[in-house]
Length: 202
Image (tube, rainbow, N blue to C red; front, side):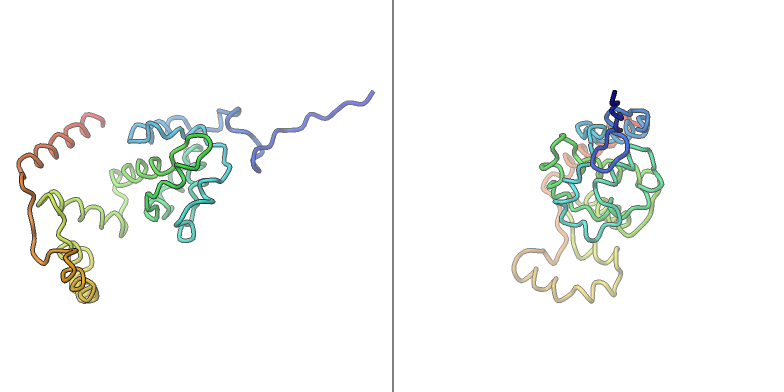
């Protein structure tokens, strides 16, 4: 009598299918990401097929592919996620999201993790840029690019970008003077409401 050896199931190079082996997932960490903004992300549904990474337009400058980033989040390896530049290299083009066969939304996951990282005090060039950008928009309700450049890169950066800035002004793509929105009071009310809602979610 010939007995057949029961083969272990392999899924795209993984020794265990995490869709069946649920104890390999860190549900606490995934729930934290979902609560931050990835409610429709379906992180647990990822089967590591690599479709997201195959279509990523910025993968050549990332140290961790979108597929790997989702895997690290599933496992709860937060330190590896924080150290990855993928969070800051993602251009939010949503190609990964539109192509995923399981309905996972890597773009939403990355945005949610970025928010958590910033809240935890992660500092790098990208978080510095993001904070200055937000501060300036809150200040006037509209971005004034020369001020952004001055605060982010200093005088040297303004000098280096001056030729491009002049071209943008001449073509009407950028104003040489600061502008404000028509109804700043309504804008400020919207900001306060958003901050209040964010505080309630903590």
